[in-house]
Amino acid sequence: SSASVVLAGEVHGGGLSHGPSLPSLSAADETVKHLPPKDKGFVGVCIAGTGHAATVHARAVAGNRRARLVHVVDVLPERAKAFAEAFGCAAWSTDAGAACQDPAVDALIVCTPARYHAAVCKVAAEYAKPIFCEKPVAPSTHDLIKVYKHAEGCGVPLLCGFHRGYQPEVHALLA
Image (cartoon, rainbow, N blue to C red):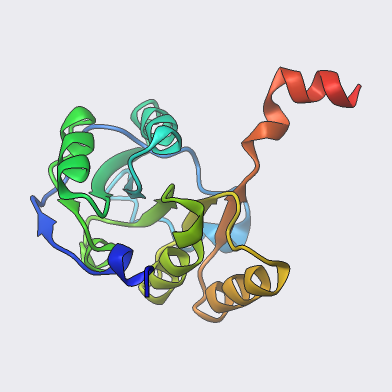
């Protein structure tokens, strides 16, 4: 399937970066148990995808002292490598599963093209990585429920970002 392209590939680099960081995953008690040990001092973040949304998230991670960008995934190796280098990240990959096996990765931000969101979320959940996914998580309500139930079954928090709700233009339209 086309989703397999996102899930199989190569891995480069390794180790921890002191580059970008991730916004707090969640204030919910359920999420707190997924945070890394206190001695580590930060959440190791993997960003899957290298487009505009990924850049926004990488900048947010860079501005958060409690997070570091430790792995980047993209199906195009040249994009993954360039994005990782731009944000001071040593590890990059074309394989979401391999990225989730990186011991430096504590959580995943999914910024791939929308048609791959559900597949990447499922892989991250299977590796017990808390997930923040750009909208939409899945193409239909039925698929959305399946992805959330899968994450829940794996004991992993899955959050979806609806960033447009915070834009002043949206507030003006709703006023």
